[in-house]
Amino acid sequence: MLFFLILFISLPSGCGGVLTDAEGSFNSPNHPGSYPPDSLCVWVIRVSAPALVQIHVSTLSVEGPSPCLFDWLQVQEQLEHTSFVTRFCGNVAPPTVNTNSSTVWVTFRSDSSISGSGFTAQYRAVLPGHKSCVKDEFMCDRGRCLLPVSVCDGHPHCDDQTDEDNCSHKHNGTWYIFLLLIDQSHIVSLSFRNFSLEPHDMCEFDYVEVHDGADMRARVLGRFCGSSFPPNITSSGCHMTLVFVADEGLTDSGFNATYQAVSLLDSKPEQFACSSGECLQREWLCDGWNDCTNGEDEQNCDNFTYPPFTSSCEVIEVDMCVGLTYNFTSFPNIWLSIADQSEAASLLRHYQVLMELACFEPLRRLLCGMFLPQCNPLGGVIQPCRSVCTAAEKQCSHALDTLSFSWPFNCNLLRDSQETMECSVP
View (cartoon, helix red, strand yellow):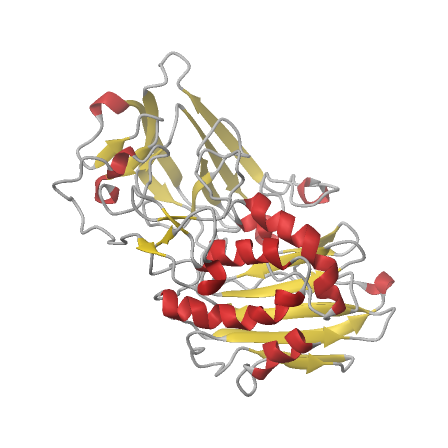
């Protein structure tokens, strides 16, 4: 229990705690004012079995966007053989969370920069057969809640796919733009000439959605509604998908758009073409970050088009992280908002209590890979690979359970070693 107590000793007043009532509420520090920087609040919600914890976040204003690497509100439930983590940020309150556990950890974390008004949330104990969603939310998969914008949007969000059933009330039009007669050196450029659709804050009712690929499973380049013209949109390859959705309510004059094939060899002056087919904005050149997969946007940068992010390599001096597969790191650490090695060492001291655990070595490598990431000689730093995280989780989860502390990392946020982007094995 020592690590559990250390975690709560550092929490400011009103920030975190143990909640054991059948129902209650909690919120970010200073709400409805701006939450303070460098906050770490942990609430342990524990209800009497067999009841389960249900959480409803009624307001949310937390620095985003997804995947929520800077500020976040996180719900973690410990199941029999694994833990399930859900993380939220942005300005749209998430749907009701029906957990499958009687004990849930809720963590609120903020970095040292941008802040918002935070969140307010309510919880209550519900029996397994009495899970519910609030009005206007859609429930599927025996307890999963969806916001209205996620229903009948062309993307199944439920395992049983019931969110895409009975969608005749929405009228869809889909255009697949394939440059089949053009070689791989061309991309698609889309421009809107007229645009006026029913307005809505989240573009829920009538909207145009553009995907960077050959179907609606491809990355979303943007969803648009209202009367403001969308920007010119460029694909990363020779495929683009445009989806138009309209409900049975208000109507407007609609839209008109044109597209053309653009040769990467004849890129527009404001764009830069990577050899892999990606098209970048000119201001991304020589900014200290590798935006092309092979880093060519950071090569031959004698004349910078944008002030570079200067991040020189430095020898690792933190005792806990000496002896990794690499000896150089770089600061500031933008992922965790750590200014220098001194601050990293101070934060890592909280984990030294775990040195007696048999699994400490894989955990040490993960922690050092995140707090003191490997320096990339081409500029920037390299995150640890997902396999480093999953290996540490596999070896340490049981030991942490004995300390009443669930696994604290979401390994899926890290890169897989099979991806084109580089990652490190400390």
